[in-house]
Image (cartoon, rainbow over all chains, first blue to last red):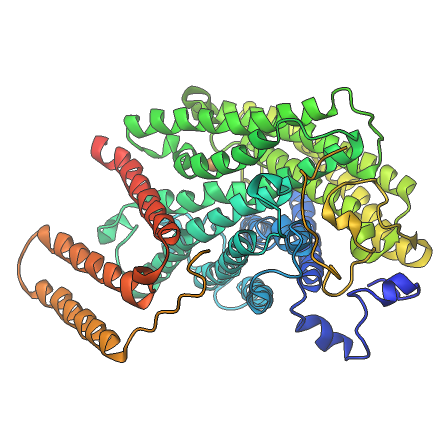
Length: 535
Length: 95
Ligand SMILES: [Cu+2]
């Protein structure tokens, strides 16, 4: 935490008022403190997950066994997925920036249910402890991949039960956050803030919250079904018990495809806040962006089968899912066109958050368009379960959600902590991260198309070049990420300058507050008369 | 919301009747497993469960006394659920 060495910091929510700091943080119901608790815990697990990813890359630097045997490798990619998906990217933007900024952006003093909000974080921590202990307790680390596909997950000797139970608990954390945000958006908007005067980040959080509430229970029940099958031999999925393994894939992806939108929708929302601020221009197509969030949330429910083209699904289901997958690309493209149109003829100042935003658009486009290759039935047969999928997925989730997270972090950091970071160093870190990211994941597209399967600890010599460069990229990326963290935590603590109220010249409500905000945000709840993007 | 200040207090008697109704339905769904109905067993179980869901939503979850807006939201969720089932069966029916 920042030192309270300026008057602004002393009057802010960061002041513990002489209370025991641990108690004052861990049991705070202030949405801003909970947002920072999530930021620290998610940041920690991001480093753990990243370290595991780095270990996998080192194993793959050359053919043959390098640092771990295949069974360990299976465990490592499983826990990498488990941590990154359930502990980092699903809570990600909505738990950190949603908690901190949703109430502020709609002119409220807190979320609708502050205690429930704290409970969400505690459930998250409890689930995280279960997830980590599943690696060490019982009969060995789970080796199923984060997808826990049946019937393997119902048969493997590894500790699947604890791992799926941790995901079950984490699901509750996600549901409660979603519920909280839905009620907050419906009931807590400042007077005069109609739906179409609400900023677009809250819009995206609202759409996301509906997915969290409606889709998460499905995967929760599915995981319980695995537990029931493993412990009581109830035949849901195992054909030898009268079950159907494809049923598992249906149930799993009914949640896990919409879950991708839980990750990416708030990212799109953050980017939509940042672009008008740095282009000094009204957002282009406000209503189209707001409604496309809802459209993505709605259509996103009906495309899950594109993960199952080669699994033996009926032909009818296959063309149906492929068709809808192409449809769901439309609202995403609407957003991209609107962002670009907002920048068109704007007076752009290129600052660190804007650089991350540009990178987001570029990487998200690569991720999105390669998604169409995978969504088409014929090309999918060739690309299914290859490194191409791994590359596509990381371009969407890391290049998209991750870069938007970094953009939001650099955009709101002065507001959250009341200190300005070293922008030059932040830009250097950005360049290193951007180069490292592309060097890490782009070769995977190529060797994937050449036939390199995903989730393999070893490979034929012809893939050596691609794997080598990919591992080099991982080293560059990790260097850049560490530099970014050093800049934001250590350097800013020592040398950061006090942040102004409105360092970027933004128009939305958070910039009318002190940096950092006071405990209950607003002395007086503002009355809203105009759209948030009037530049 | 316009009905913010309207309070409705359900009597213990109503809750009691609902509870007994739910228990009876539970006995029915357990009971039918002793009768040989073939594939109809599942149908009966699902029908009984649907009736129970309806009762719980109406009384315990207070939907009967809520605004039309909330009712429509719940209806939307049931429609979503139905669409997901239909799409899943695009696989099973045409395999
Ligand atoms: Cu998908």
